[in-house]
Image (cartoon, rainbow, N blue to C red; front, side):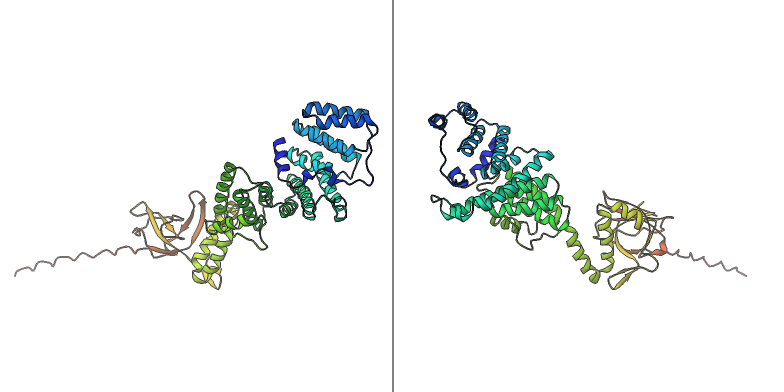
Length: 441
């Protein structure tokens, strides 16, 4: 837990400038007496954190009110950090902002610890949201250009502001994610990445938030964020092993969503160059690609377009419901046919893959999308007199009775009269009778 905090702090640019940069005093602070100053000097020189904590607690007991209360709170938080005591750190920071609501560093620590402690209780999430909003509010005053200390450059002061804003938006995004407010989470994570594009964890969280919206148009954005988390290897990136796992997961999910690796390299290159998907960024889903193909098929091959649409519905998450409500016991295509684009399709078309049994079959297995795919089974009430050869093209219509998803197959009950292309029974060749013998007279 504390390692996470230290790593986060390491990535923040200007906290090393110290408390003097964060809360300017209108008047010079004064020690209560020489004893308070001597106690502070002991604290400043003490290298052992446990001994320093005891001195800080002594200072707090002897001088509950002091002009250096903000500095004392900051020293106590840092000492608890060295001791690995996260709960005491956040409790001290909460006491700090209660004593001084304008203590921007106290609000900052609550933000960091809210996320790193991973406490998802409602009270902790409320506390994190409050701390993030308070931090953003304090920034306007505490880090205004007019309050820039002489020892800080303008660039340092701007960076300090960006760092604080980043931490606040990161907290708001994490809180929203845990509350299942996924669109809000994505909005806040984007603001955090604008200020710190190197935070791979935020990219991963943004990916998770977009996936969980369950909105089709946001799944491609989710894949972009996961790609960013996988390819970013600089400061703020995940360790090599974690990045390899992220890359493997990204590739698998990309193919599942898009249907192939096409365009994957371009997404990875884009994710290397920016942490935020550009305006209009989109990865097409398999369904969107198939829909486009269907529109083209409606013009070039309306019979195949009808079958592709049926198969897509049956293969989707609502396949069983679609079968029960739209196909089961229905005659497909019906007597009047089915409109497809500007054409009315009255029969489906397929290629014989196999027959069962080989002679006088009652079942024919056909491929419709491809001559080699076993997608449809035609069932006849009576055996066919002649079995069609594999590769024979048939046009058919019939009553749909059942379907299976694995392996995919739809069963039609058909009448021979509804199937075009069946081989005709061989006509019997009449046997010629031998001429009768002529009787001799």
